[in-house]
Image (cartoon, rainbow, N blue to C red; front, side, top):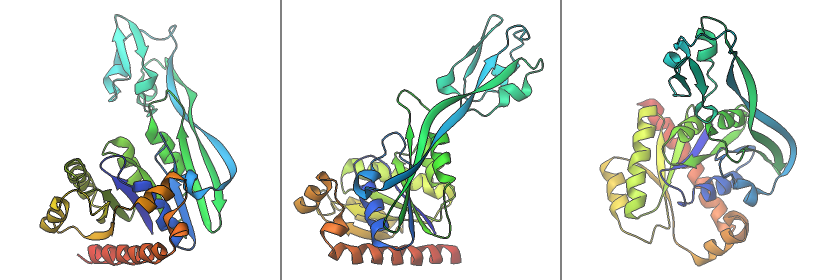
Length: 282
């Protein structure tokens, strides 16, 4: 089973849930796909054994062949190509490396050169296989690095994906094709607003999902009311705790510092399997 842990906003406890769930189960693979700011490794403390670079093909125009016809601009849906007079302008920070401009150029005037945009590192900690991606500083394209991380998915294991925050392209790239999504939220107006956006995304992708409410005894009950109204399962509640906050700030995991939580995360896993089975039966 491949489980994604996502949130409509940052700071809700997404990584906390992903890490502690991984540490509570056997035969696990944890993928940190928050490639702009990966931090699961801080808590897992893996021994890294391999590192590979991630490249994206960037178009380069041969001025001796180009007549400025504009076909490349027409086919680029990302606005990475523009025509100024008869000159072709390439904006690498917008390019997704799809290859359309190269394929459709009628004069074979465009070739592609690989540009390094990030790295993928793989390692281990006890029974956990750990992989994360790092987007290079100054680069804009997170999805190619996320896809490079997801190429390591081993479906013979329980796979947990720590997704980026928000509801934009990187999140969709991370959670797409997974079996279940955990949406981590907090009982505040901002938390509820962003949860509603995240729910809309996973419903459009038709992925079974449930909610975890972190710092559940703070804020208000509107998140509970929303989930009840929308028939969304609340899989777990984690209360606000100075002890947990202290554990987190030291870079330690909850289940190792508070062993009683290991069973709670195992119960969470059983609820996920039950929810997935019920969704598949509909």
